[in-house]
Amino acid sequence: MKSKTADRIATGVFVAIAIIIVSILVGLFSYILVNGFKYISWDFLTTPSSNIRAGGGIRDQLFNSFYILLLTMIIAVPLGVGGGIYMAEYAKPGKLTDTIRSCIEVLASLPSIVIGMFGLLVFVNVTGWGYTILGGALALTVFNLPVIVRVSEDSIRTVPRDLKEASLALGITHWHTIKTVLLPSAFPSILTGIILAAGRVFGEAAALLFTAGLSTPRLDYANWNPFSEQSPLNIFRPAETLAVHIWSVNTQGLIPDVEAVSNGSAAVLVISVLLFNLLARWIGSIITKKITATK
Amino acid sequence: MVTTLLEKEIGEQTIQSTVPLQMEHILNVHDLEIFYGEKRAVNGISMDIEKNAVTALIGPSGCGKSTFLRSINRMNDLIPGARAQGEIMYEDLNILSEQINVVALRKEIGMVFQKPNPFPKSIYGNITHALKFSGIKKKSQLDEIVEESLQKAALWDEVKDRLHKSALSLSGGQQQRLCIARTIAMKPTVMLLDEPSSALDPISNAKVEDLIVELKKDYSIIIVTHNMQQASRISDKTAFFLSGDLVEYDATEKIFTNPSVKKTEEYISGRFG
Image 1: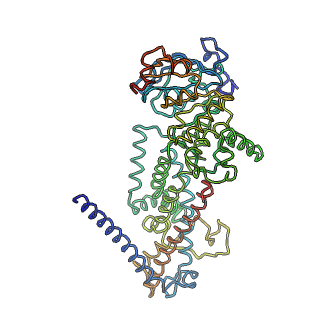
Image 2: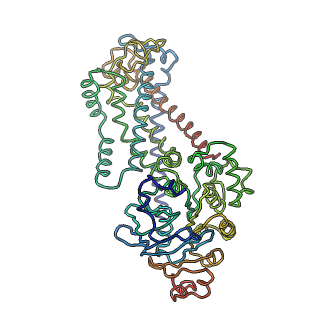
Image 3: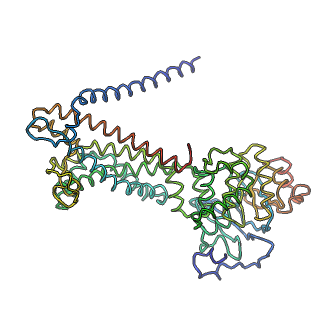
């Protein structure tokens, strides 16, 4: 009887915890969406922001956020997954590997403002670039690399040993086994890790304040020459992202409609992350189905 | 074939056997010792494995039979700290030599594991996985080999209508025969089977046993088994291992009816192990 009671209490406790988590999530989401949704309009999304007058939009900030996200992922994903493969498959167990792993963990837990300061020093001053999209993307890479390395290593390690042995026993090289057996099997969990990292990148402000800057030049979306000053594709221009914009209008905004802009931006940010998540998962499941031939 | 197994052309002399090779044998093992770190798992065994025959390795758990089996296609290389001394001669070359190209070796000496381990791909993809790697890209040629190896593994009739479905949708017995088919597709000369039917139900087990007897026409088979009936049913020769020693190695009939060592008789009749 006693163990039965304990079992019931445990069930109750875990259900309660689940309810707490879900209500925090639902509360947060509905607060942001209810407050911000009314400010979102086509106009809000497609006009540039204004420094003094009301009625500014977030066109450039939204574009910058996605562009920095894309650049960061182009740099961080190959490096991170490559590092994960090294840690899981090539690193020999020993002191050196343990040291590398501890370094990765320390790097993963660094506060983003510290990475911002580091970025200011290296990607802004030492390189002499000034505030640039590339500098921001590199700072965010530093910020996210350890997470992706860690997730990739863990995902590859959890692939059953049997599969690796089966492939090697068929006379397939180690690298080809990694490429065609281990990575496809680890793909869903690596993807989850990358999505989480991408969410962090999208919402990150502190690391970008000192690297990508607080301003955006006047952009001409018809200009696709990546070397032109006005081109949105230029990676050597300063770029204020959505998350940084929310911070800056709230702390130093001169516009009369601060509340509208920041609430609207927050809602757009949350919806973007949500859409991005769903899209990535959907594409991921299609790829997984394709390689595993499951329905 | 022999030279393709070598990493480099040079050094062939140094790995020549000191013992003359007998042609009816596919493998000649001399004084093989295998260590895991400091621990010795196989204590200097010598035996000749016959061509186109089924050789069964029996003995209690931890006797070194699986370790021996895994050393034949160098799967022990994956275990940190494992090393082997002595000789396993195959086609005039010592398999254990540093100069052996392990990848090429494993194409000729295939292995099937205890637990069915199909890749999470389609049935077709499981068989073509290694073929594509070894350079066969033409669809018609792949189709042909897939059908041929599934036929040989007695699985074709059961799966021919769903080749592009996931291999994981097959039953355990079918999965194991798929693993055998995928090894056959590489056209090996030797097949190593590590308790291939211990995880299967009796009907699947019987199918796998029939298959093994059928396969010995084309391949030399070495099978590790804990099932005495299985060893006596399908093998031509049986080797009894105990604590890393090869206690007795003889024709299966002799081992099961009139063994020369008392320990062998005790093990077979179930008095220990």
